[in-house]
Image (cartoon, rainbow, N blue to C red):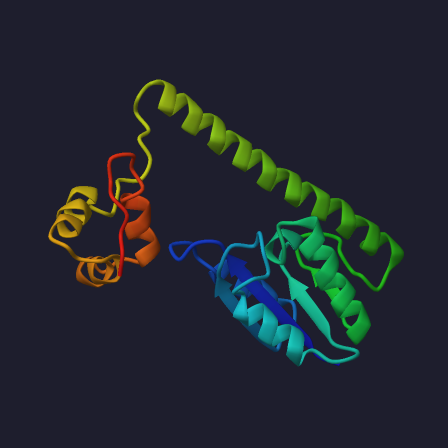
Length: 188
């Protein structure tokens, strides 16, 4: 029966030291760290390694539940997987201990709030983008493909594959560039 820690931040410029120090101070023998978004379990290799490693009687510890998951669905899936393995989940900064009924209930409530916070942040971001667009400030990402160059190469007689190779882009991108009303069909 061992206690393992999981520390996560969303971006590479954020610092994990508080989480790591706190988890070690609470008896974690090993702390897995990663800098990945918590909105999905996808590409969170350290969490996957830890989930595969844990065994019955172990405890997974985080500082806060939002370090483990930002969506209630992912959180419930993780907790369900832990429960199947006979592993308890605890948090250092919140009264979460899935070995108790009160801890389980509090975990579910915090999971709902973590997802709510993520959704609010997305809404505020979209509102900000809409306001910036209305002011003409937000133009989106600059085009990465020179459509004039694609058209020029097509006019020289090159096919989609050759244009894609020459410009280092995908063939689908070439077809999208040439899909404008005045363009001719591209053949390979």
